[in-house]
Length: 402
Ligand code: AMP
Ligand code: MG
Image (tube, rainbow, N blue to C red; front, side, top):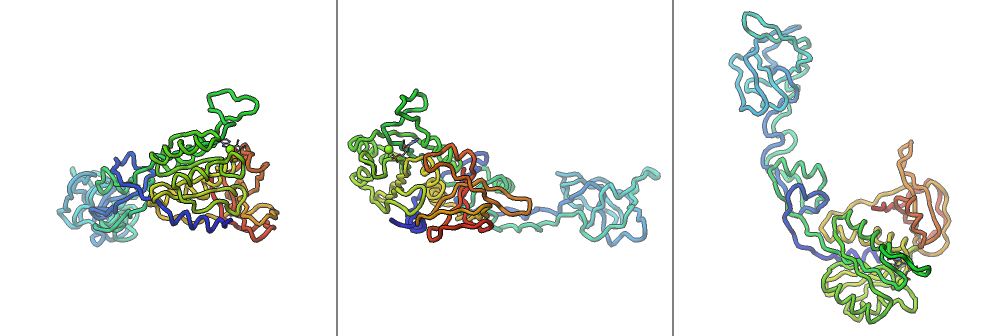
């Protein structure tokens, strides 16, 4: 049996590579960028007025309440105008180019405007603070040619806005695989069927599909009965059609747990079976010809759920080319005792407390079959195997649920 750290290491050194595709900006959210996005112009591209008001040259104003003749108006979207007289001003609107000859803007709130002999005069009620006030200078944020988004960036709303601003109508991103989700077990019936008293409805596959959709991947369901022959023929078809295969159940020591045997018969190379963790000890992982990655997760719903979040999801994100994310930590709100020499994935409800700590309250439930308990949890803590007492106030890695 290997440790969760070893399992992670093995999994992450067997990433798959997916092709790239081009998607429209409106389809890009949540995808992993596979091109470098560069500033085609300075950010901002011109000296941009940031307040509605009047623009003038600060060197031309002096005294308590300087007065200036208003020469005209510079609206947003107009080419740059030029001050004819150095000591005059122009009315300017937010988003307009700063007129040439001006360097400072006073907002309307600080200006009185009166008419005199058909001329408009601006009187500054407050002297300007400093040159450049209310002007966002050209290139102040980013320079033309600078890389704004690099390969491996997860595309959220801000990234999409930046891509739009440099004229990218489409983006190159990693193609998302259609993952095979394979449930196993003679006791399972489809959700649409009324189970007999000795049967249960399939739920792991839905949990996996929902969690996968958070990464953007789609999934197709398969179901295998507890027969070696049917498991082998079924898995052969699955491996043909899906690079990523997630199974649940059939990997323990039961008399009808045929998944590991069938996978090996089909040429999937076992990289490990059984991990020193609870829940999820029977976890099996293998690779076929660097074409298929097979995660055979234990069938108990809490085990399936946790192994997905702890191993499969990070592996998928990396295989899609995403940059590695930093470990999150949360602080235990209560003492916890766990004696077996296994890493303990402790289900918790974690939330930021009043004093700014990210506090995780243990919600232990009734073992790995108690998936209704997950309704009260938003993730789990990793409590190391070499200890049995975990104290309130100690911080541990926190894995959030999707
Ligand atoms: P196994 O790992 O096949 O021994 O299954 C362990 C437990 O998980 C059994 O009680 C199964 O009925 C249950 N189980 C397995 N697969 C699923 C599934 N897809 N949905 C819900 N429960 C499952
Ligand atoms: Mg089973």
